[in-house]
Length: 387
Image (cartoon, rainbow, N blue to C red; front, side):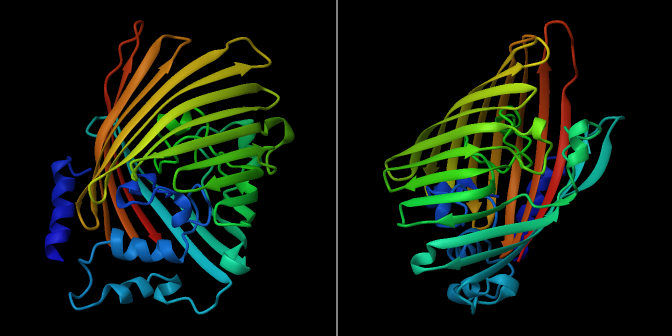
């Protein structure tokens, strides 16, 4: 146990004391999110199998007695560390907090702690192989920074639901879901501030009411999503449209895919296209890459904009419970010919069941022919707890 703790904090020190759907776990052989999640594309509560996997294959044994069997650790992965006794109801609770240091190491450095998520969730499931199900979450969610001090912020409450839906799976391959969900576009990485999520506007606060049709088999997986916007927003702000994603399996632990989306409201039309790859390496490591193009066309003013983004990330299993990450991101705005590059190392540590610690150090460089800007370093430390 002491060796595991020392490894974690030692690596943090090496990085200058620096820090949901987890698609990078394809390295463990989990190609599809529905293996461990109720939502077929990840996010939200994990199912009984996902709980056991997180406790026994992902989480460290550092805080457990060596004589404790894996089966018992898996059984304790249930709600409040108990094996579920009821067949139909699965409660879930999750908290994420972030310590953020902007302009790390500079005179202008600012430090803040952000409560990113504090959710309670209930899943209800019935029928053979749980063919009928519903999921509802409610909790604290801060107003997105991009909406603060804008008209849109007036319709956003800090206590709200980010996800609620019902689902029907007539067979293990087919499923249809209706409600408030994330759009089916791109690789659903946990870094919601990544250019791959902010540019096409598929962040953790961009859910939409709609219907998703999902198909999955060992050879490929596909999803089609028709949506009408978040119904809690004013009607003129709701982004309505459709999205779709497709992944094809190559050599068991490799998936290549395409995604597309078209949406709009009274103020802007947005279309996006992406190509992506996820590849499992060895026992627990992976590589992910996504490249995309987004067109945004305002309706009330001139100023069409084409944006490009790329995201590369490796996820290296150092030992059980400890993962090392390196991310490289690219963003280009065709309007002003500028582009940005962001990169940095991370460490992810699952010390035990239901606990995740993460540290990231990011360097952001802005390249602009007219303006010279200084590199910016941001330091983040995150804690994720769930029951």
